[in-house]
Image 1: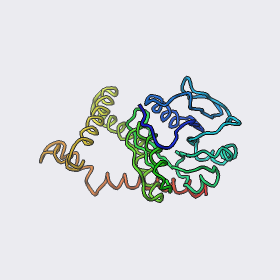
Image 2: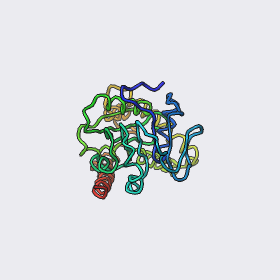
Image 3: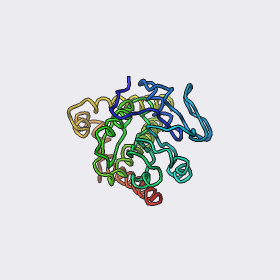
Image 4: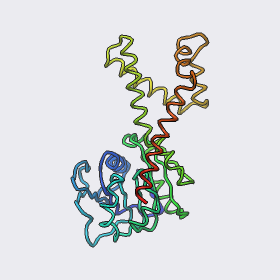
Length: 269
């Protein structure tokens, strides 16, 4: 069951229910959140779990204790006016690049928490970064309780680091999926059937990630343990390590994502 926070979770309203919002909501329901306490506000009505009240606009003469904002960042100014009078006790925003002052200025709330989940929250193996300027322990307990069923929850001390966290953990699954596809394509280029290469690549990534999570050693040490001197793994690592090619590629990849987050934050101010 979902941990019971000191700060009220319900009634919980979710504004938007796309891929990320829907994944989060389904995990909360699986963890014991009462569907009778949940209202989803979405124009299309698509993606809302069975048994959840779905509306096109916030219900009149009702109030939410927790408001989860899960629309696209570009939609903030379109949805904010209809939420300005709700005044929830807790506003949780998953909008990439939209800073706390920009949220608080548009949607008054008792407290604002920024949350950056990534897609594996759908299976309870995600990462959710959290930030709030509020020092209220009840606020933080409530946000932590909401994030806990989704996977690893990490509080960020400086909102200025949110762009970096978003680039690493929020965007990271996309980069991992791309790496998995590239690993399988490389196997196919050596003569393996495409479907078999994909299965081998995905299973290798999954097993290696599990091993890295439970190991006492750093991933770099694990890589060296796999690679015996003069062996085939070492020969492949030599390609990745030459001129820090892989590190440089990922550094530029994350920098591009962080830069885009900063641009979105500037646009939302």
